[in-house]
Length: 187
Image (cartoon, rainbow, N blue to C red; front, top):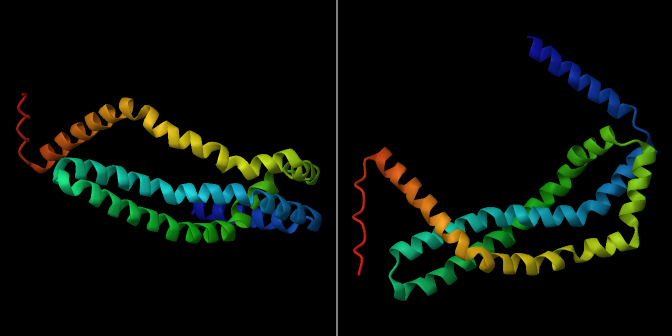
């Protein structure tokens, strides 16, 4: 009962807080959200890519272990095409959802945490030519880093990932009662 009362009071308080927001402050919040949209769109693309990368990593491990050598390359290309298609189809859906939710989520935080004067300062900073230029080339700057980082750390990361997969596989096999695979013969 107390939780319901507390929730009702919280809703009432937030409704009052929204009612007190001046039109000028609302305009400033809308401007900040508009200026932040490129960053949000980049983050949304990352949300679409994250599961795709995880799927690709899982599939790559299975392909390496179970697919005959002569079929691997073609299968990898097919899976990569499917993953790219997923990202390209998912990104607009996520972008539309983010743009729709931005005012009620990020906008609410801005409304609660920033005064009108602070929002004016924030808009000024976000509209600064140097910041706008930086924002426009942000993806261009970090894409080469991401492209080089994978190959750079692959040698260090692959053994760790394989060890983790082996540990998890053993635990799963033990949990489901599957027999342990025989160790590979050393030449």
